[in-house]
Figure 1 (spheres, rainbow, N blue to C red):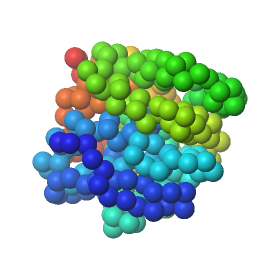
Figure 2 (figure 1 turned 60 degrees about the vertical axis):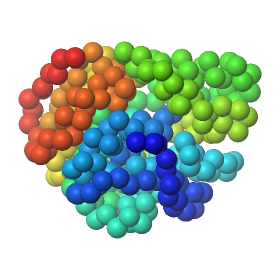
Figure 3 (figure 1 turned 90 degrees about the vertical axis):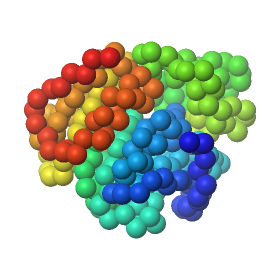
Figure 4 (figure 1 turned 120 degrees about the vertical axis):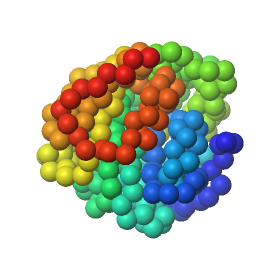
Length: 282
């Protein structure tokens, strides 16, 4: 499948690009940072044999519009996501979310009034003290990072991307993730979005996590260095009916490290949770 987002949706902050594939019950994929919907290039074709799969690039990411003055915080992105669901006419889709896509999907559900049939969160920002590492450095020193020489900026982004995978990228994949952040405009866009992502937007909905009644599935790479396993436990403790599953030998990017196992989870017909931890060996 060629990865082309051939549709547009206008948000208050600019144009979001999206695509839809397959037929059947709808499932929506929500990416995180500093990625794009390109993350789903292997997952979407597999799911589209049974489901109608919706993919999109968040405002300020990938093929979507990037410019100064955009509100790219989690609250704004959750509002954009809710508008996009309305635009698609989806009243109760399955939602699969990764990284800050988890916080966006949760905020849309708990604050913005979106409705899902079920929710799968993997290696996802959800709450707690997740504002750490590169997030915190850029949030506190965005003006410094924005002035990095282009070679230093590209090396930083490439290193951050490599840190997210346990097994490494296939040829050409790292370049595909780097491309939107290259050049003066890409560099400015990278630090623009990172400087607006903060913990305050997840604190607001944390008390509501215990009220979730829809089926919730949590999947985590055991070797995740971006969001280590304690973040999976944090979320599981607050959504006690959720099913927690581990994938061994995989880091933060299950789409790259364990795509077959991830597809296997997503193809399961039941999302009813339990407290049992399931280990999948590579």
